[in-house]
Amino acid sequence: MNVELPDGTIIEDIPEGTTRAQLAAKLKANGMHVPDEWMQGAQPESGGVGGDTGKLGLGEAALSIGSGTLGSAVGGIAGLIGAALPGEPGQGARVAQRVQQAMTYEPRTESGRNVTQAVSYPFVKLGELADYAGGKVSEGTGSPLLGTAANVAVNMAPALIGGAARPYVNKGVAASAAELKRNAIKNDTIQRAQAEGLVTYPDGLVGQGLMKAGGIRNVEQKASIQNAEKAADIGRREAGLGPDQPMSTANFAKAREDMSGPYKEVAAMSPNAAAALETLRQARYDAQKWHRFYRRSEDPRAEKRADRFDAIATQQERLIDSIAQGSKNPNLLQQLREARTNIAKNMDVERATNAATGEFDPQVIGRMYEANPNRFSGGLETIGRFANTNPKMTQPPIRTGTPKDPSGGIPMARGAASSMSLWKMLQPGVPHPGLGIRIADVATRNPYALGVAPALGLRPPEE
Image (cartoon, rainbow, N blue to C red; front, side):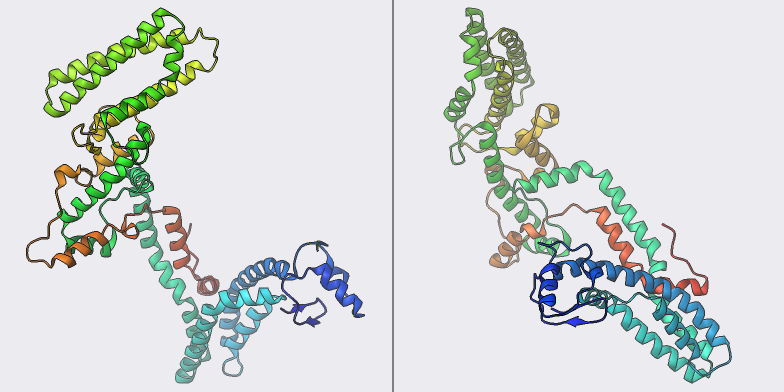
């Protein structure tokens, strides 16, 4: 890399990572003078020449762009005045260019020049087009004033187009932000579900096209099969089972036994505590039995009996809590509450699992969540919310069957399309209004063009 000193001396072929202190020592060893001001702010052991000039280069680029914007405004006014005064053809354009160049800061570091060159490239090309158009208009009409006006008009074109488009862009962004606010809960559900590997209907033209090509029903069936596996994984985790452990009645009971350590500690404190624990266990068993029967029969009498045993279990929980408060273990009450939460999750997952097949039904969790959302958290809350949002994509495999090819289609092509429509890259994303506003702001503004706008009495749109 090359480094330019304040006096204009250029030092070539400096290795990357060289610090100012190292460079100064090398220059002094070769008998060269190193200006004191060049060393101001340099760190003796850090601050590579490339790193320092790199940071300085960004600042210089910003200063160059900013001063160029102001220079364009003043230059545009000066150019119109110069074109109106007596003089040689092209006088207005030359005046505008000289004023702008005089007011524009020129970067002094290589990094600053590189950054400025990269950022300014589109504006430089626009300026070249403006000069060409202005010259042609001046030659064709014989009027330097019209030529200068054409030059300014070309430079202003992006600002005029952007200014006209900006209200519509802002209107669209505002509408998107309002929609995002209205759908905040739904979007949060999608984000949670995607984090767990659950899939929903594809988004965008490509995703929608693939879904139609593969058949919407096929996509729903494949999504249900995929979601059933992911939901079962979540269920095992929340129930305290191993990743590959079958979701059987015996395994659920074994997991609850492992979680019940704090209850056993309370039961050992007194006969009353032991009796309360036994009553609690029986009430839980009876409630679970009636909940299962209600799931199969939807008999309201079964639901009432399940609720009655749930109430008995809650009463015994309170009794056990009061006994735990007298324990010498200060953490016992908190441990009881954590165990109670884990056991409740275990029982909810078991309630949503077919005892005969071991298949987990996300929609059962969805109905339970809808009835009492406050008692759910973590992965089961995600399943409950997602199942209620996407009922056709959370059906248990026993009800979905095997995806079939729509009549008249090519089986392999249909199958491939329906599978591809569920790819992660085609899943709906949650929009970010802040990013949209920033993109809209950049897309409808041209710093140089807005700089010359005051020459014709124009102003940037109000924020």
